[in-house]
Length: 128
Image (cartoon, rainbow, N blue to C red; front, side, top):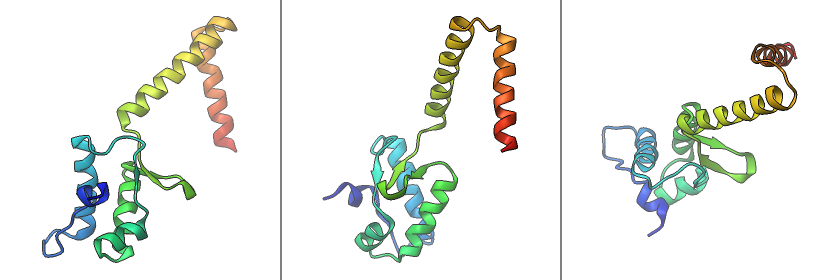
């Protein structure tokens, strides 16, 4: 039995819409550890075919999960379980620490100057 078959199961007789069941399959898979950050999930059409569902139903579930940050699509590479907010926060803190070490330590800017530099860069990025 494939991982897909064990992770993705739906009951078409259930009063719960199928697309919501698919979302629940993924969130339960993440909670149980069966799906982890970076794991690839099947393409919409493949999963729809395997489960005997309309591709639009699977696509709706994927769109909802992507909008909620549960999955991410990386173009032709496929669809993957996204980083959790904790993972993203830890990565952002690590990047900020590296920045501070370099700019304040190696380049001898004060903490206030570091903040000003970041603010200027954000303003420039926003301005286009």
